[in-house]
Image (tube, rainbow, N blue to C red):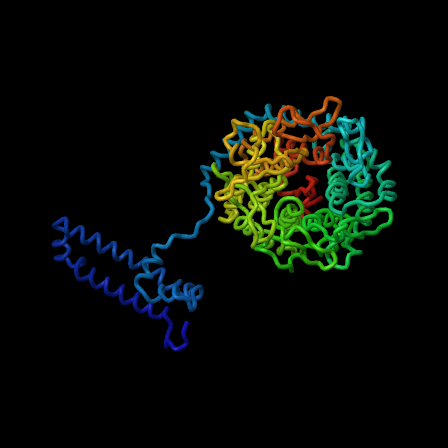
Length: 629
């Protein structure tokens, strides 16, 4: 507002409004309120029409005066010095624009009747479906026990099973990774015999393994083993003591091993010259060193915080959380591309390295942990994580989300050479974690219905939830487009002006056969969990049964093409041909994540509720600290 004005424009509006009100009052008094005038005007239809028009004009002036007299100061504050603000205050046309301006777009709200009707419909649907889904859930439990039986028979104590050659292999440090990764899945399923066998092995053998083993990867060891031990500690009773019906050792065994392991992993942080930890740790030496190229991956260093935070909470020792949270606090200060970050970072300099931006390998779980660590620590001073998440998702929508041709599948691509380089229509299966994370970020773990009823969803939340649903469909279609009904490790998409060309998935009946390209080097399937993970989140949040049905189709394909009669499940070399050639390895995450998420997808939402737990990136449920018991 100009200081040269003797009084404010608000005063001008107020005086003008009073003048208009007096003028209208005089007209009404002179024309309508005299008995003769009243009789003359109401004798004919024209008079009646004029009366109605004048009354309508009076109503309009009252409405415009309400918006002009009181809120005008708000308009000045928002538009100070702008032409738009000046026009709204001084020109008649501005009044009309203000009067007819559309209100802000708000998320839809359900009426009480709609809520009651929907609840009744969902409850009746659940009653009808319950026997079917109980039976399907049992089949998933049977599959888990079959996978464990192969591991127990041929690879007990090794990291992973080679189901075709009937032997074990160590690729994760030799700590018995499958045992620890699978333990909380067995607890959730009530597979008591597996819980007893796994727990007994941990009690007897793990302490010595931790003391004597050599090099391990900080990230993989944290998410699979540390996360698995902490989750097992909680699910077996934790500080409450052992749950009577729970099999296995005293819960303190899990916590003691978790602490012993974490004390050694901490050297990755303390040995580094920056806030960015080294990638590798030598357990028996309590030493750490960088990867051969000197770099750490962004996802790996930013995906250990849930676990270390919870360990600090349990032990009362802040050192674990302090070291881990330094990483995110440091990344907060670094330059980004609309919230997006390169996939490599240097422990020496603490700076990002290169320009490659993607949500696939080495980038994925950085974005996942921004929202999950914030949820875990909600109410603390970690609100900056939520801001970073919101900014990053806006960047994803703007820079990475595209639609395929000819049929418009929504997908997330890559910027291998940064924002100034070209866009790549490549999407790793790993990116299929994103629909679940978007849904979780939108409702904060509540159901969509409850969040809408309590008016907790912004319009941006609703847009992100819609994007989650669109991306989940794309992830499922990547399965459906193949001959086996199982997804390849990587898919490419045809986009306007850039047709990749090349082979499809082999299922000629798929509508999206011409949208999706699967290159020969990318046709393998490693039993990955990301798509069923997102189906689990979306079913829990939306209640839409299609996510269950999609999950069942994927489970049936696993059963048909990856199950080994002698025990275990195997990866595949090529999902586009039948019969698919098998790859001799059962990843730990098949038991730790894939089967767990499918089991929970088919079960009751009161099991590991999303407003009380966060799942680490290896699907180990960790209590939200402010509500943990």
